[in-house]
Image (cartoon, one colour):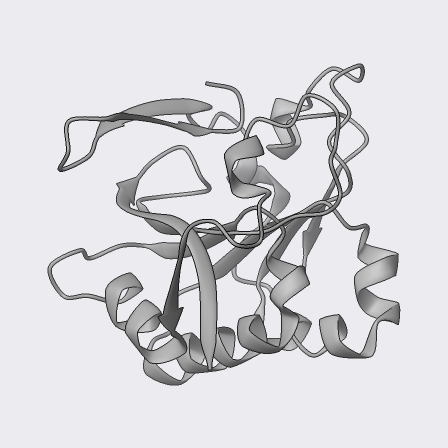
Length: 183
């Protein structure tokens, strides 16, 4: 099974607690006004990787980390592939997984295909981005209407306070990558 992705970065400090390896899924139809990642919206953009190849990159011994973050685009718009990726991550590691989603927690729980991803997820930051609602940095949410949902006991809400909100990377082509919830 293939997953359409936009980008992978390793060694991030602004995408959840600790040092994280991050993948941005490609494709999103939610169109939240003011979205920080509009380049991830085109479902035909980015590149396709097999679940195994993506998992290999996220869990590479050359890029040790404290956790995996999945963002987008909208990861749950590729829910079947996302579930396979999450199961593979949990089979091969004990790393916690954080997912950013524009869907509400209630929507994800009520969708048969999306709810299958939740048992493999430690944290959700979910709900549509609304640029008119100030961020809630104590919950690591880019707009105050979003929810921080702990799905395992790996983290507490306190772990999401005082995290770096943005960072810059230079990719191997010399392009600057801006990352985080409020760079």
